[in-house]
Image (cartoon, rainbow, N blue to C red; front, side):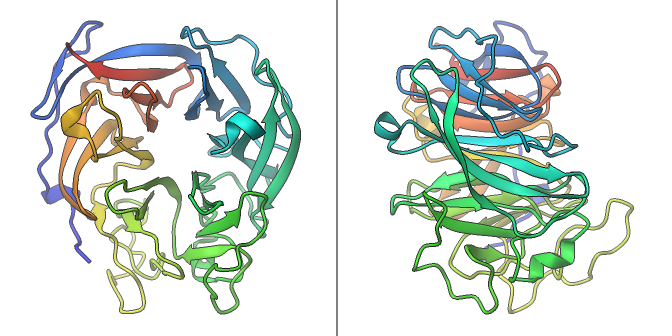
Length: 374
């Protein structure tokens, strides 16, 4: 597989001061940035409801509604689980409406469940009532089978597949990184489940594998998206100090963490001298230094003709919205957007209107929208 470092790739960084009516000019598109909503506490994920409203999660444990007219509803959606743990990186994470939402009204979400001393990532679903004020009949469909301590590396992204299954991305629990090479538990894996939480019969048969494990050897997967051109599923994960990675999922793949990595520990010490081994699958892209990639999305709208099929990454430490030009299943170039704003970005999605939506990770967080300048 092709292996590239972002440090050697072309990056176009916009440096003009941010203004309300500022036009960003790039080789591929000209756009302005609109503020859709503000006053959100560390927004983590966004999804779009029929009729124009949006659901936004706040890491601090609230599910919010942005009305079709753009106003943020004051009261959060009720009915979320009472055992949610709000601790450091843990809390309410991804939200995705079901593909059959118009008939089932199912909303799926991930959250940190448990206590500071024993916690894990959980997947749940509920029925959104007609007034969008409450989730009813909430049920936990899956929980990581390892009680880790502290509040780090939960993963937490959801991706629906056309075959009635879904993926949930997970993390290694930070203090338990060696468990990412232990297939008998869920730490450091991506799991594949049926939409009711049961295990698909055609999941890979991994020796001693825990129920649902699809791939392993991950550190902290916080991005997942399907390439519309090839149908492949891409994930992005946080490395330590350097070594963030993009992978293409295949059944039973082992991506090597922490036995191989392009990063080092935060204190500068060496994790391993090895970058690759025959039994581990190499990333198709890695970042050194780290940008801390979070949500990712292939642009599938019509508003930006020259962005169609490109991959966008919301980056936390990198404080950038990174556009990757993609050819087939290869990254052939990158462009950094919105760097002048000096904001941490948590998620990015293509909206049903064809615009690009971006979440700002802050105690006074925002939902931004990129629209064509004309």
